[in-house]
Image 1 (tube, rainbow, N blue to C red):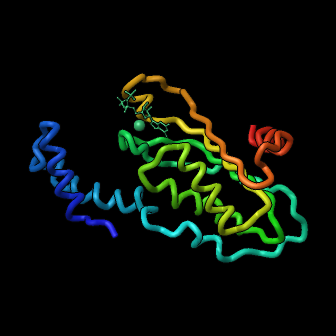
Image 2 (spheres, protein in one colour):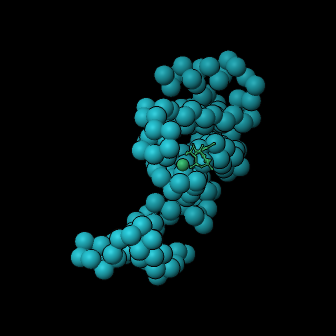
Image 3 (cartoon, protein in one colour):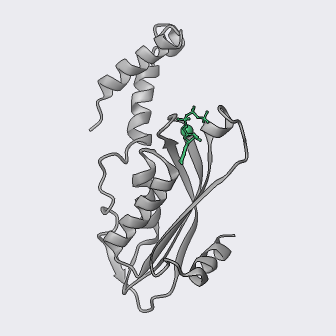
Length: 184
Ligand SMILES: Nc1nc2c(ncn2[C@@H]2O[C@H](COP(=O)(O)OP(=O)(O)OP(=O)(O)O)[C@@H](O)[C@H]2O)c(=O)[nH]1
Ligand SMILES: [Zn+2]
């Protein structure tokens, strides 16, 4: 559970820290707004990643399934600035498939936390392996980090691509290339 009062105090202190007046009219409601926003954008903290994967359906054939271009928003844990882009989740079932929306819901559990992209990619793949028990999973994320665009090195347009393979995808160039081709 989030401590809304603590977040509000911190926001007031932060505003003072940057030389603002937290009591000026435009900022009066800001601590409350930020606290409410936090329960949304950090709402994955403490959530069980398996919760969306309890209901599965029988699969007649175990062919590759790819859910691509999933809109993704997360927050980098180093600067607390957003990174955002697309996620692609491929898996080969082993007799059971998940509801299509549940792949996106699973990645959201991990995206709604202070994150680094590599870890977000790996945690999603591992959760799918653990709870869906497929033959293999591949998760690809391409994202732009605002800590690299609006500040720091200032390189807008730079995309960071991460991918993680588990199960039959591991070291299987043919499968990996098939997914990458379908994603392009
Ligand atoms: N590996 C990884 N690095 C990230 C991610 N998000 C942000 N970063 C990087 O985290 C690093 C933090 O580096 P520091 O040197 O501690 O912080 P900094 O002085 O603000 O660094 P600059 O961004 O280079 O100005 C930066 O290089 C960021 O680009 C991520 O998802 N994965
Ligand atoms: Zn950052």
